[in-house]
Amino acid sequence: RAKMRGRNRSHHFSPDMADALYRKMTLRHHLTLALEAEAFDLYYQPIVDLKSKSLKGFEALIRWHDEELGQVSPAEFIPLAEETGQIVPLGKWIIKTACKQLAKWRKKYGKNFIMSVNLSRAQLQSSLAPTIEAFLQRYQIPPSQLALELTESTMLQDYDEAKQCLDDLASLGLELYLDDFGTGYSSLSQLQDLPISIVKLDQSFVQGEHKGSQAIIEATQAICEKLDLKVVAEGVETEAQLNYLQQCSFDYCQGYYLGRPMPAFEHEDRNFTLLNTVQDLQPATKVSE
Ligand code: C2E
Ligand code: MG
Ligand code: MG
Ligand code: MG
Image 1 (cartoon, rainbow, N blue to C red):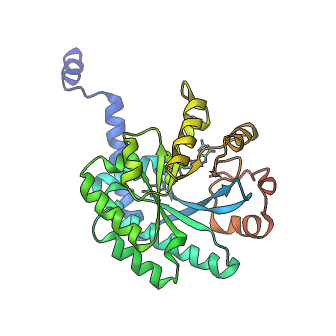
Image 2: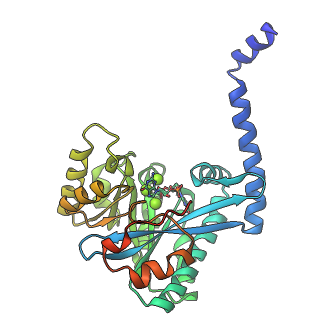
Image 3: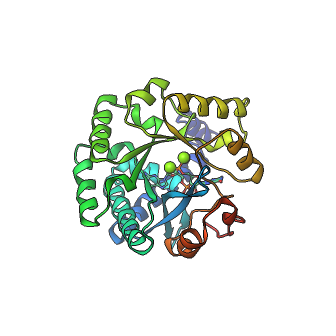
């Protein structure tokens, strides 16, 4: 026994690691089946324009409810899909579904809001821009109403290739958002070098998790204003946070306080017809994710 444990230890393989590996293999298997069955949903979370007190748009966020595994968080399965390359077909389904929803909402409400979709690094291939262009045509969507969100780490590997793809996307007329700003590895020069129009400040700052969070919030707003970039504050959960961001002249806010990610139908009356001021957003209905 002691010998066994000793040997396991020398291979750095613990029961916890066995559990993690088992979970990963199980998820992989179920993910493959889910992909074949297109067993995913997109939820939509409002982004609010603080200056005009109106709806700026929605961020599409994927949800996966597996019959056996229950609800699996994208924070867990997106990295797996990235490892296996499944993020490419999955990402295509996500973009298509978001475009379809956008087309439906455009017809029904005719409003000028923007739909933003998260992208993974592996999706930044030369075929992406033509794929998106085809969806825009099929669903009759003006490119200015679709945005793509990328994290800073996206740009880590093969910067030139990634930048080429972003330039192609931008020349279609799409907007690009830099997601989770402040937590990754990007240099400030990337803000100028890449065709980014909006920076999304990571929720950990809004929630005061770092030493000097307020200083970072204010500095980010100041830098972005100078560079002619707009800023979205992510993860706004309280009225106090919202008031503070308003004081700091933030352009846009997003968070549970203003609205949770919800299925499309849950937004319909609330966000499009009733919602004209930030006040109307409160209290955000408590719908579980
Ligand atoms: P993200 O793009 O930064 O999305 C924001 C995450 O914060 C979402 O988690 C959202 O539900 C959550 N959130 C929004 N407001 C609040 C708040 O006030 N408080 C707190 N605590 N959380 C808030 P979610 O949906 O679990 O997604 C996690 C991450 O998974 C996303 O981070 C994104 O990186 C990735 N992801 C989600 N959907 C997709 C997708 O369709 N494609 C790709 N490639 N990645 C996705
Ligand atoms: Mg995002
Ligand atoms: Mg984010
Ligand atoms: Mg994130």
